[in-house]
Image (cartoon, rainbow, N blue to C red; front, side):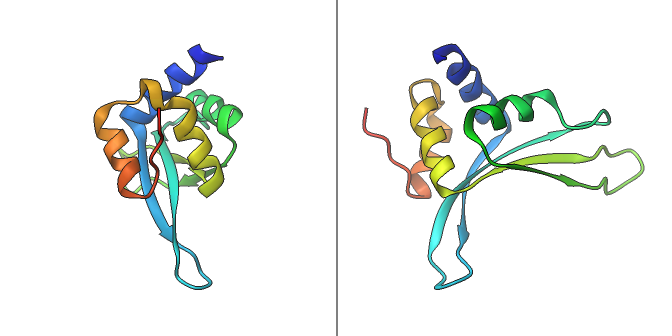
Amino acid sequence: MKLEYAWAAGIIDGEGCFTSQKHSKGGKKYPRLVISQSSNCGVPEILLRCKALFGGSINIQAPRGKQDKPAYKLYLGSKATKLAAEKVWPWLGKLKKEQAKQVGIDILV
């Protein structure tokens, strides 16, 4: 399983974004992880593998122009984001660790 988490850390480093979203009730912000991929062949396997590891939901964004591909995005909620960060932290790059800390995720190793 460690190999899968190391692989996922590489995907998150390259295609992921730790961000925050305001809760509709009360306005409190909570962390989210979004992983994006474009494809003309349906949902990319990368997103399916990450979803199997961490959960979340996959949404599709229509192409903006004739040459663009549909964009698929895996969204993780607050709990799943924290769990995913915990699992991949040892392999996550410095930039993504800083990004995670900025939205309130700080893993003690």
